[in-house]
Image (tube, rainbow, N blue to C red):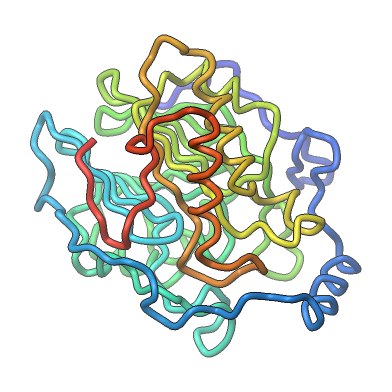
Length: 335
C-alpha cells in the first residue's frame, strides 16, 4: 500500500472545520431547517410507496472474487455498490441498516431492502466511505464488516478515521481532496464534492466529504459520493479520467431552496456527467449507474421520479440509452 500526495489541496478550515470553497455552499442553518420542517406539513407530497415497490434482481456475485480479467458491479441500494475488479473486491458507502438514523426505532426507513445481504458479501479488500451522514456511514454495518472482513482497508476523507476506529476497523487511510492511495493495485484518488458533514451535536464539518476516482491497470471508475453541483467536475475528469464507469447520485433533491446546496437533481447529475467526460471527447461515454434514489424517503420528490427525469435528460443530450444504468436492487452488470 502506497500513499502519494500530488498537489494536495483541501477546503479552508477556520476553527478546525472544513468548508466548501465555492460561494453559497454553506449548509442551511437551524432557522432554515425549522422552516423546512414547518413547511413540510403543508407542502404537497407524493405518498411514500409501499415497501418492496421497485424492481429487484438476483445478484451475480463472484465468490471469493471475480476473475483476473473480469469486472462486475452490483447495486445493493442507495450509494452502496459492490465492485469486483480483477480479483479485488471494493464496496462504496456500505449502508445495510433498516433506518438511516441514530436509532433503529425511528427515522427514515427503507422502502427497499439491500439487494445483497451483508452476510453474503465476498471477502472485502477495500471499503470506500464518502462522508459521515447516517445514510452513508452505517455504524452497525461498519462493526460487522470490521469483524467479518478484518483484511479490508478503509479509505475515508480527512477526520473520519476516529469514528471507524471506535467501531472496530483497523487499516484506515484518510485522504484529502486529490490525495491518492494505491492499495491492492488500485489507485484511489479522493475527488472534490460539494456537501457537508454532521453526525452528532457539535461535530458539523469536523470531517471532510469527497468522491473517489479508481484506476486499476488503466480501467477507471468514478464514485461521486454525495454532492451538489460544483464547478470542479471538469477537473475531476481531466485529472483522473477518462472513465469507463461512473456512479452518480440522482435523488433526494426537493425542495430545491433547501437541497440545492447538498444534492444534485437529475438534470444537474447529467450536467456533472457531461463535464466529467468533456475532457476526453474521443473516449467512449462511460456507463453511468444512477445512485441515491428509491431506498429511503429523504425528501419531497416522488420516489420514482429521479430515474424518469434522468432518462429524459439523458436522451435530450443525445446519449445512448444503454449507457445509463437504472439498476434493479441487487442487479449485477459486467463492466
